[in-house]
Length: 544
Image (cartoon, rainbow, N blue to C red; front, side, top):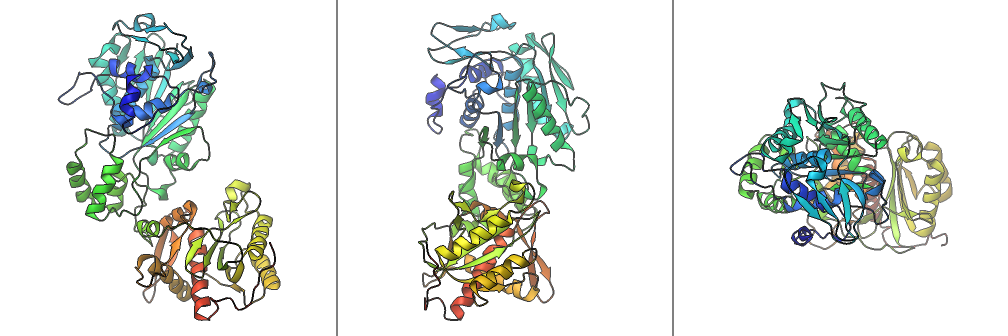
């Protein structure tokens, strides 16, 4: 339990967990290489934090439960290079292979775990404290260690083999080039995109390394999902580790990160998005945040590596060392500049606003953004549950719920004094015609985003007002809507003649609909101010 005090300097552990697991790791998994090769392992703070969270036990867990005994069904660890993800992943795999990782009830006091009872002659034991969750090893551990290639999987498997060779696990394991034998019947298999024949085995654990590179094209998305199903069928669990991913590649790591499931442990330290990775001083601050808990890392060495990669591939440097998920090409608008404008505030009913609407049908999203006369942009909420006015068709069986969108729009016109709505008509001609009939042509304008001259002007207006520093205090600001933030980061500028551009996605999998709605809302505000309509002359309020 002394580990809890150590972790408390940066991480607070206030939940039951199998503390025996990190203690077992430090006794059985020696330092694999370097000047300290063969010495006792001591987990870095971030490694300890992720370990105790992965083995966090539900307070109501009972003997006989396997995966359901734990708070998290699986884990995702996103950390920059040189933090020690590979060796730490190897310790987790070895713990699953021979360590006390299966919940075995709650200690009453006096219980002791002895390695000698489980075939290990190292002489180590662990005394459980009253009320502490206890653990035992799997009887027949079948484990798969997965990566995109043999070189990639070696980042975990090489230190794993060294730990076995240099430590007490050599008595219970025989490690070869492609698999490690555990006892008489258990094994750890290496799986890559060129060796998929092992899929379908009844595994109890899958370690999936660099899932930021797993996607549909290289067939590793299917591998990851197959492994998770196989582990679930045996009462086992899984873990993903990765650097920051390129969001244009729609990776397994991104899917896991964005999943709504609450039983996934996610560790992804990130610096404030207002810090620019291109700025050397900001970069130093970013490194200090994302490498916290990695006490062995020399930030001067990290800066030297990052600066060199920045010369040819800034996005790669930001992913590898800044722990950020950025696409490989330059964004239309620097996400740090957008984040710097976040200043959430309450917008009261009857406030005079404009709206921007960008709609889709079955693939892209549908979004409504609003902006006050003072330049504060936000995603309105609607309905009894105060849902945001952004719809992902995947959440509704593959098609945008048009009735909901119409109901939300009606509510916004009733709640606020809507001076102007700019709506992009494609796919929504009928609904836009209805809004024109209801609220009038002066308030509802069919604004086609396919016009290159007009859309270039509108996008430049928003980008300029986000980037510039106003001296009169009337600066653009926004609510920090996370979906809009993601869509802004996904947005790219596609060149057109006459030094113009239009907005496009960084990849087909990414969405930018909230960006378009923001552009339309801001353009509507500029036109309203130019027309002298910013000050209320008559109320269009229709009731509560």
